[in-house]
Length: 282
Ligand SMILES: Cc1cc2nc3c(=O)[nH]c(=O)nc-3n(C[C@H](O)[C@H](O)[C@H](O)COP(=O)(O)OP(=O)(O)OC[C@H]3O[C@@H](n4cnc5c(N)ncnc54)[C@H](O)[C@@H]3O)c2cc1C
Image (cartoon, rainbow, N blue to C red; front, side, top):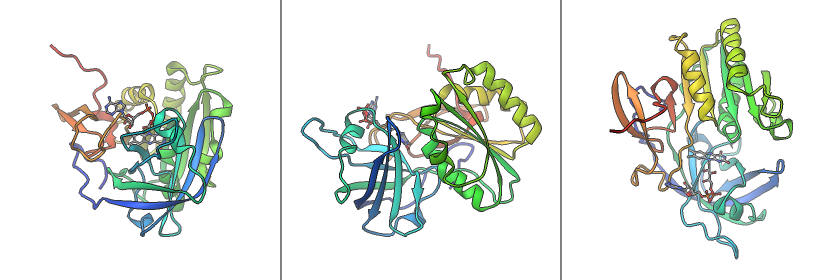
């Protein structure tokens, strides 16, 4: 179930899994990696771009009420193995960061849709920033296994935040790193870089995640390349993650028809060209 022009919801079977924390460690100062072993086969039903709702533990300091959405960073090769890479930021993720190896966590999913991807593609261009990197990792793996060439533009605050190894996980790619620290990640500089890459390499598809600014830039640049498939995995604040509470709706333009769609249910992957950047009311 890939991103469709007007958002078809994910009808896959969603379940709750009791997981054992098999591995859990800091990747850098802000991000942690967690590997879980679920109590049932989970890897083969989980696709790139999908996410799970995580039940973060209650600690003396933190009482997270809502489940937290996290993109799948990796699934398999064992049937019950699932991985997440997360930014330790607020109540839920700080509580999650205290989980010990051997402890347990409940997760619900898989939720949402997946990317449009074909093993017949020649090259894909992936543009990721921050946590977007975790979302894109399974797509990188799929493309690499299919023998599709990969260009990865990675944007970060500074080289210490980049996590190139965690992003590629052994895949070979033409990597272009840009940073806030030296100005190479500015919209102006990125536009030059992206236009150059697209013009020279002619990717079959472009994917992005992790930055609204990059999303809007890509939307503008790709309007000159209507034949390139272009998708974004959106990270909208959400509560239930299952389409009921409507807290994650965003406005989309589906062939001139403006519609509110639920990021959790019709997404999180949407065509870049359909995202409406700014909403004007009244
Ligand atoms: C599809 C998806 C995939 C994601 N993947 C990743 C990932 O791979 N790695 C990663 O680091 N982060 C990811 N995120 C972001 C991650 O979910 C947040 O960083 C995390 O929920 C923060 O939780 P917290 O308790 O630490 O922060 P807090 O800010 O303390 O709490 C945020 C919680 O409150 C909810 N919330 C806050 N405001 C609203 C609102 N207005 N309406 C409804 N609910 C609200 C949030 O959904 C969340 O449950 C993803 C988000 C989405 C939507």
